[in-house]
Length: 151
Image 1 (cartoon, helix red, strand yellow):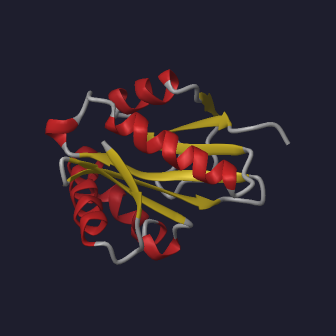
Image 2 (image 1 turned 120 degrees about the vertical axis):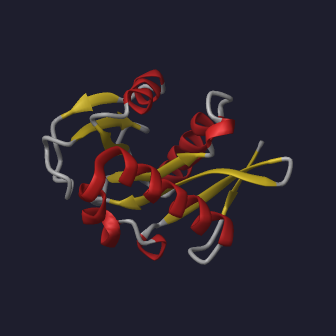
């Protein structure tokens, strides 16, 4: 698997992000529309795409939440490539990139209904944290945090 840093106009990233939006619309319905302005690839500090044998199989991004915290966003893996390590590889690459840019903590959120995602984040060393202001509202999301390095 190869993880590549891409720009906001990358066709593979845009196609994967569209698939993610469709997935979340099926999972949470209209709530997903509240995220549109927060999920613009141009607003991300880093965008990555995972490739397996030349095929784009997953993506993820991060953006600065504050001077010390990077928010991991837009994690999506094509269904037939799930449970093969792609999500872990993307998240680890994003964490490393954020740490290289001076961020000491990563935060992320997921829908309360996506139990597989929550299990993955816990496996990767994230801990559940209090709600941090998602547009979906506290009743809809579960938030996580992880220290990337010591200040």
